[in-house]
Amino acid sequence: MNVSSATSMTSVLAEGRVQREKQAQERAEARLRDARSAVETLKQRNTAAAKDGQEQRKAAAKQKIEQIKARIRMLQMSGSADPKLLAQLAKELKSAVKMYGGSGGASAEIGGADVGSSAASNAAPAAGADPSVGATETASTETPIAAEPPAPPANEDAAAPKGEGEGEKNPETTKSEDNPYRRMAAEAQARVAEQSRRGAAQQEDRDFLSDARNLASQIKSMAKRAQHQAETDPALRQHADQAEQAATEAVRAIESAGRDLGAAGVSLTV
Image 1: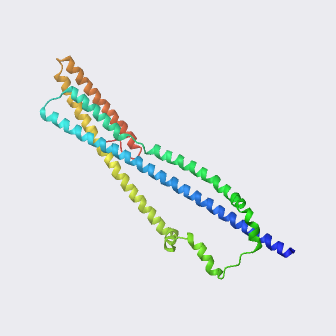
Image 2: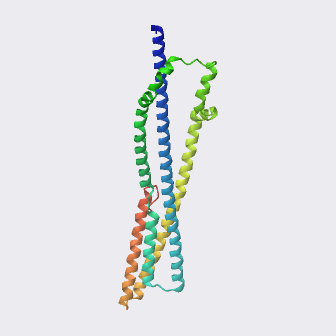
Image 3: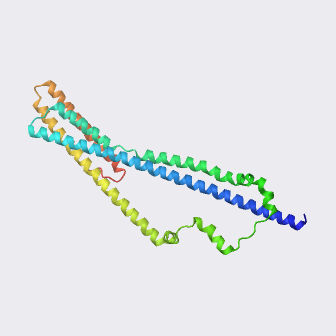
């Protein structure tokens, strides 16, 4: 083997090694992209599940409020003010308010972020390890490759676009994504939609807190009337005092829920 042949063989081997390392790196990057995509999907699912759970709690709390309203109306129509029943209604009101004000979305998103960081960190070492693995996997096949250098394609201009076009996006889609005006318009529309959604949710929170505060006020007023009616009956007086205390605790729960919801922009004045 003369010097020219040895030089040619060395060049072919080097070129083949570079190509294999490049392909291994591309595979590693593809796996990393897939891992990040899976993490993002998981985070979105966790967020959606948290929102669903919160909506279910709020719906149950609203239903309980409607039931309390109906029972208070029945008491008012009958003209009675059973202090034991009033105390029970006040406790149920407090429980409904706490149920409504509870939140689970934050912990779910943090959990999703933790999962995302761990998955990405697990994928990153793979990206660094693949090139060397790819270089050694095919070391035993280098000599046959060198024996007969691959012939160039008959039409290089036609062959190159075919390989490159496999992963290319639709030209119209790429053009739309690269257009800063369209991107800004899409982002503005998304912000408007999100603000509208938040505004509707905040109004629902205000309406709920307003209803709960009105019910607590009615229970407290009826409990005071029961206190006056039970001045000669110590047992009823005790129940009436408990009803007023339970109504006061319900008001505190409403104020606490108002502060929690106020962190998201809801006014504490209900």
